[in-house]
Image: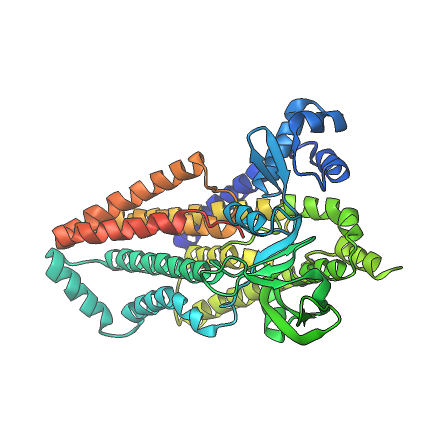
Length: 324
Length: 191
């Protein structure tokens, strides 16, 4: 009974800790002026190559520190690239790292990039779940030691032979917890490696003029091309597995099928070649990619201007961060 | 309304919601999992299969909740972020309190045990923090200082434990494990 009371009293500590942690974030001051700054950027600099703080100050009726704070927040969210005194706008649907974004800009001849992301070709490969084998294996090992008769004695003998002392349950527990943590680290790193391997050279970049550029192999430099004029049909295909995974994955994914017609003879544009279908697998935010492609096909980017503010505010909240 | 206007409205309406459960259902799912866990722990205790005790049961519930919260809850707002930080504090403090409690009721232990437990707390704490608040530690000077401090604590604990166990080969393993630890903490680039 006394134990229950002590344990009950101990429960107060995590409750208090929860409240402290909750309040630390809750009372954090919101970044002021985000709305106004985003509004000014969308209205005045959406299609500009860049802008300076002084340019923005002319458009926004806010003190300089407030504007700077808002710009820093947008920079941290990946919406702005800062080069000295210049800010360059990243489209909200660009999910490339800064380094890859620069590469994509170079390879598309500084085109206005409307959507860019990495395919995730290994997402549906169930064998890659084996990376979690490290942590699962260590957990099973720990359970076996404590639950299977004789296993604990084996562990005690092992520790005794190494240290010359008889371990208690706490000693064994501590060692097993340490082993589980090492398993967790190995799984985390293996998972990173698989993702890095998958994303390394599987970029898809959609430019306003260049159309779709994509990598076709690991050592590629966006050599896959679908010109915007040759896009015949676009299809958004979210499979049952993807739909299920999207409820839980940090970033929703889906497949995009693009049918295009290749021009057989460049000198005679009337003579069309075979149509080909390219499937971009596990693209982040596939519906948004579909909208971008559809507007590109219809040769009108009006929707982008209308929705730029919403997309920017959504991205500045950090909703669209895709962890590698 | 043209095709383009329709597309624009669709984006305005729901960028994220199109892929996710409604927030009420997300909360219900979390509630169901925690409810099942509470019942399972209660039944294990009632039928004398495993008598875990009140505090360890609470510890399990807090850790399971901290693990499943970002997986099931996809509504990103201030309340979500505050709850994530609260869960992290609750999970870590409950575990530290549990260890101190176990120390009080355990009369003897090996000298390496506190080191292993500190290394475990640092490691699991860092992983849980990254799981709950993936955007807080960044690739900047403060991020690297934080990673440096945590990795140093981990490396020192691991060194004393492994050196006492295996001597020089223990140092090699310590270096490898510490390097892996640093790598696992470096924030992953967004893409």
